Image (cartoon, rainbow over all chains, first blue to last red; front, side, top):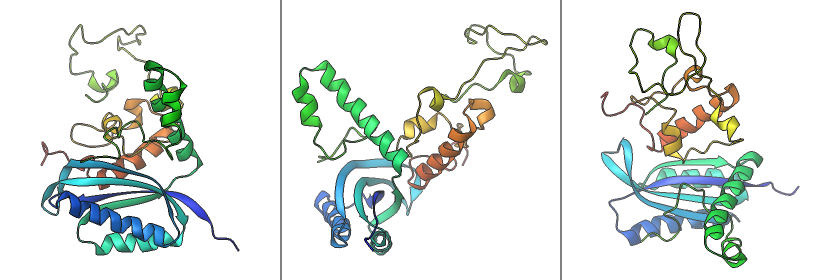
Length: 147
Length: 103
């Protein structure tokens, strides 16, 4: 029987008191867990450091990362175990993106892609934005390349 | 600012004139009723993202409590989705469980 692959979204918070390259290391390890169990990363968004609404482990801010990936179901158990064991990951949440969520996602992406393209110029801007796996939701403008 | 409470609930607190905006229909007792609609239905949204904390903030009181749908006007279907989204956002410390002012 073929394994079922679904699209998941996982958000986790890395200890922000680490150096940037250490944070990258933590993220890299998470990516490895996903890819090792034949998962395919579709999108990775680093929100960067963000203040918490309340204190977590005596810390007031953290580095937020959102990963969207497609993988078989048993990946999730591995991933959450990894989160649990990594002391530098303060919080995490993983969800399945169902049809509705994906639809909303692409609609938001289209809207986001449309507006700047409409203001700027030709189709080329839209095309350039097009092939990106699934562009970021409107809210997370400080996207992929955070220093 | 969160939603203005319906006039029924604030009958004893006199509203400031000039702030009430344009409300045409008046009830028998002179109360003002504003027609509320579900924002999510208006925008045809069928997924509420827990990551959009700014949006969610509108449906949370200043103390951080979820505002009931009878006040916000959100429909039942969207209120259910909204509640889940708010709770997810709380887990990730995007929204407070209890705001600092109350602690």
